[in-house]
Amino acid sequence: MDITTVQNRIIEEMTRRGDWMDRYAYLTEQAKNLPEEYQEVRKDENAVSGCQSQVWVDADYRDGRLYFRADSDTVLTKGIIALILQVVDGRTPEEIVGADLYVFRETGMESNLSPARSDGLNAIIRHIRMMARQYATG
Image 1 (tube, helix red, strand yellow):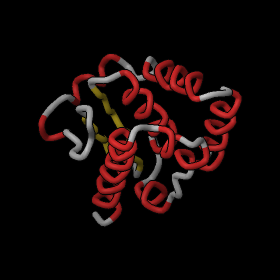
Image 2 (cartoon, one colour):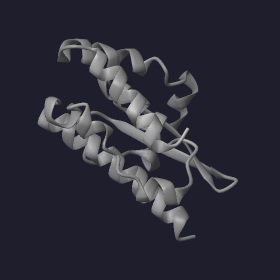
Image 3 (cartoon, helix red, strand yellow):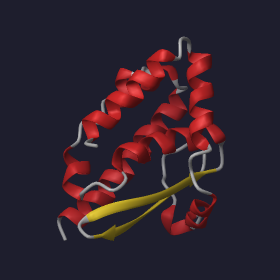
């Protein structure tokens, strides 16, 4: 499934959830999709700066693709991370760098999260893109 298809599926799922209380519940449900072993990324070198919550992201580069592991100390942020990973995990660095990650605009997430959480969302995306750029440029 390509990035556009994954984003459209997430948008459809979130749109079915009427109000923002239901959408927040959806995000907390998504947090359960992060495997327990992802907690192993909780190291200083994997910390993402610019987030209200503590967030850690690491990636493995195999066969020309990036496979991410990420975690947070809050459930809502874990849910946001789970959605981000659905979109970018297993993609080539070039796909990640060039992708318009519109899912967060189209679902209203950017505008309905608190300013601090919205800044954190953008910090996580910047961090993932930075990692992808490093692999794309060798």
